[in-house]
Length: 112
Image (cartoon, rainbow, N blue to C red; front, side, top):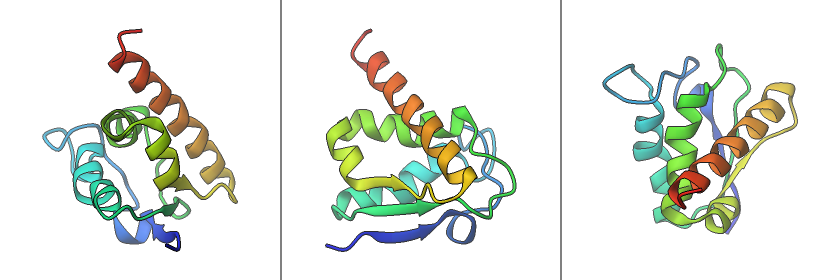
């Protein structure tokens, strides 16, 4: 199956919010539940382009969205499905931060 292209700024928001829906619109929780879960349920590989967002994806957003889904499905499956487009500076930085949050979430889940 071909890797789907997902433009975060156009398809979700240019201004990502905080960790939980109760704290802000366009939260990490909303992105995980409404967007990322669909890719995993369909076993659809995706490359996420973050160019065009007006504020960076914060650590709480990344932990909630990407960290929690990596814990749920496992890091190998996560790495197979999710890819951040690193062709721009913001994409490269976002990818590095996302990977840190994924590793942190998995360590926490494993009690380390």
